Length: 164
Image 1 (cartoon, one colour):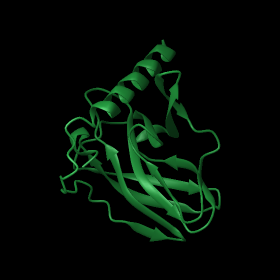
Image 2 (tube, one colour; image 1 turned 45 degrees about the vertical axis):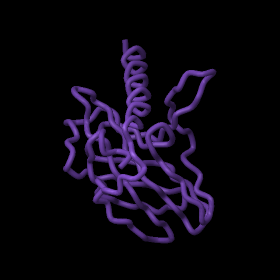
Image 3 (cartoon, helix red, strand yellow; image 1 turned 90 degrees about the vertical axis):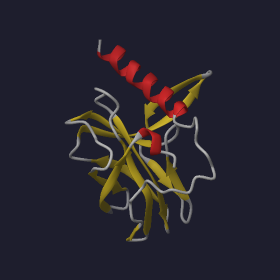
């Protein structure tokens, strides 16, 4: 039963990621993300946001961009809003889009950005303690292989505004 539930959640999030691209206009310049870029300890963190809950779904995702001035690795994420927080990616498995946990973390190459976005790398928020509401903020802590621990407060945005 747990595998079925997990499979359904993965399928819904994959479908939602594709659906969020519908109706997006490149000429739309409104920024729904109120996250202020953070520069600390050789890291630049920008465009962080979490997706508001959809109905009764107990899972959500957080996204953003990280740039490091040295080679490093994002090894863990945590938040008080969810029982479990994992680094995930979407992969194409013989034509089927699947989501899976990234073992060993996300490699950061010096002076290159890693972008976490719907349909790609992301931070999975599993078993939310309560629904995430657009307009709220949530805490997110990021732990790196170098020992750096960065604590953020990120905005929660509606599904419609995820790509704007």
